[in-house]
Amino acid sequence: MNSFGYKIVLLLTSLLYAAIAWSSPWIGTGQLPSVITDKDNLSVLAHLKTLSSDQFSGRKFASQGSIKSQAYLVSTLKALAIPAFNNQYRHGFKQPGIFQTRQGTNIIAHIQGTQQKDEYIVLSAHYDHLGTTRNKVYNGADDNASGTAALLLYAQLLKKKPLKHSVILLFTDGEEVNLLGAKAFITQQKKLLRRVKVNINLDMIAGSKQTKKLRFLSKDLSQILSTQKLEELTQLQNHFKIHSSAHLTAGFKRVKSVGSMVKRTNWLMASDHGVFSKAGIPFIYFGVGTHKNYHSELDDYAHINQAFYLATINVIFQQLNYIDNAIYESTFSSAAILGSQ
Ligand SMILES: [Zn+2]
Image (cartoon, rainbow, N blue to C red; front, side, top):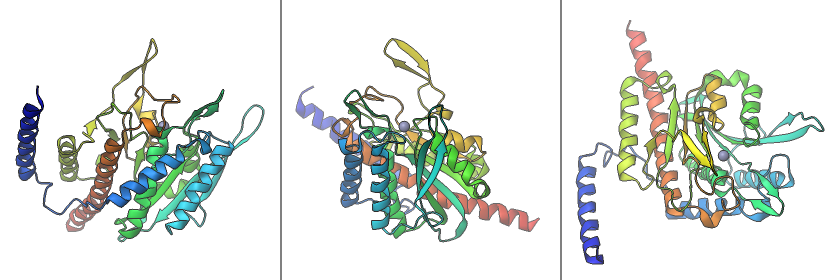
């Protein structure tokens, strides 16, 4: 096709999209906050670039690179005036080994809700990655500097405009070592767990240059959302499948090929959300699934898909806002039903 034909197709496509958008219940209703500015986009990319630079040596569990990453997260949260969780940002845990006990550290912050102060949404992203082996730095830009940087931006946005529920910003350590940080959080915060409504976990949301879809997996949302709100959430997700360049898509591919091997992935336990789910907490997990740069030294800032990443950040933030409100309204309507009986 020549470039003129291409332009005609583009024009027709945008007209079609505009027509669909016009008929969509999510456009123009004011329900979706569009508060992520160009300045925010620059700041989230800067966080991602810094965290995935060689100075952090791949952010390996219990390494100097990890300590540097922790310092970066804490100083950023402090600069944004985001309160620490239970008066401290660093929540340490021990990992006993055959030769030595290693020290892990989750970084946790907290933003009080406007209505349900004692009920929580836990936003999680692991900041650790694979480290440096034989002079190769595994920078983990997608895995998971992408989720970590997104959480820093969300912290900033939620500080300005808090949700109805309180939000715990959980930057986990040791995800790459069998989900250690998430397990430590669950063990250390046993009393709090029954007040955690949902875990929203971000792991690999920037992809590679070829990545086209942001995928999600959720479980047990019917515990917190009414049937109507669940349906609305599905509509919203369908909307983002068409109207966002994140092309939000339900479910992950069950098989991946690693070299000549074909592996099945248990996506339920593929990241920190699995630990929350085992503790009975509903979750939504966002990620792109595996791709050619996954766990390779090519997963660096130069190889992520920036435009796609900015779209995923927006799509996830809008769902977070929707879910916060929907949990509140579901609770309120079921309380009203109970009260009238
Ligand atoms: Zn990961």
